[in-house]
Image (tube, rainbow, N blue to C red):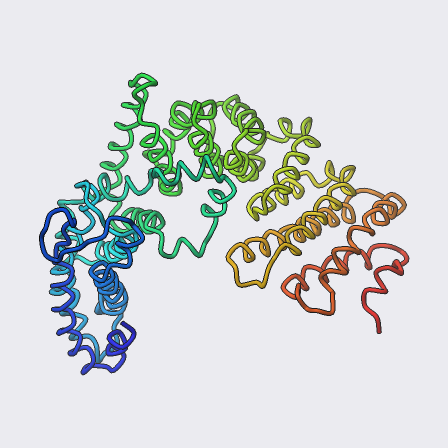
Length: 495
């Protein structure tokens, strides 16, 4: 594909050559791929997902879509194309993109018909669609089918799959890791569905937002009216997921922002007590997106705080993680200080317990927010906080392998967040109302764990060089504020 795509870089002649390739790609995309049991050409489609992904026909479709996505990005909007490419760009946007849309829509409809389509083909098709909604020639064709796209293509991808639920139950650590893995998102059809949803609302909101919200509302009301034995819990999760994805648009809308509080209390909050862990996790996840709405009843805020505090101690790790993330947003709501201050020590302990179990950088970031919010109140706990954060840093930093693993990247980010939080704690101590006489003993008590962290960062091997800047910031704090610099810190930087 790089050779074919490279033809586009040759200017007008290369673009002319692409016309022939587009004809071939159109044939490939229109080619139906029957199941092996149907006995139709092409024969022999495998039955396992892994083998299907490697089957030449699906790979042909994948590579074709990959080229189209790249070309649409370059030629789909003629006004942004290079002058020598404008004639081809005009043809691509007005002739080829509309012609290609039909087989791509057919491919996206396969799953709703109970047929197979690879995740990669779905992801690339959705990316093509995201570009298509921006130009008139393709959106004109899409417009009559937008309800199908939203309800039968995008929405099902926002619902958890059987594999997701199995992973949630059997390997919650991996479930959490996958949910925060930015590298996986590049080829993830779920992320492509979110991007398409965002693109639709950005470019074609007037046509599609009311209808999609009506669809979600009908599903939520249907769920409420159904007895527990017959409820479709995954559809409820998908509705909450979709509404969470639309949070910015809904909060900015004069029409919808006043409806968010009753929506939250009527449809989201009850799931904090659901028998299904994935719904409790989704309820906690939702709070980070809607904590900043204008509440008319502060008792609702208090209720959210109570539910989120309980979720921190939920038996399911993903629920704990989402609660820890969400509390970082909820704690910034005016008036919640009175809810958190009486339980601040317990809150900090819960965060450290979660951090000892999994290196989630968002959790540490939320802890940093709490420390910053309650700077003065944190000071009495500062020594213990620094000790725990240092222990977490050592755990994350020294657990990394050769640095080429995705998990290593996540641990490295989590380790860096620990250093950020350490700086926040020390800053609260040094810039607080305490006298130098009161600050000095605390800095002295922090010295042993800090020396251990700084010794790791400044190790001559250079294995932890990515943490050097944060390490030097900490060293700056502990050498600037005391009246006398400790010999332990001086020894870290031999002349």
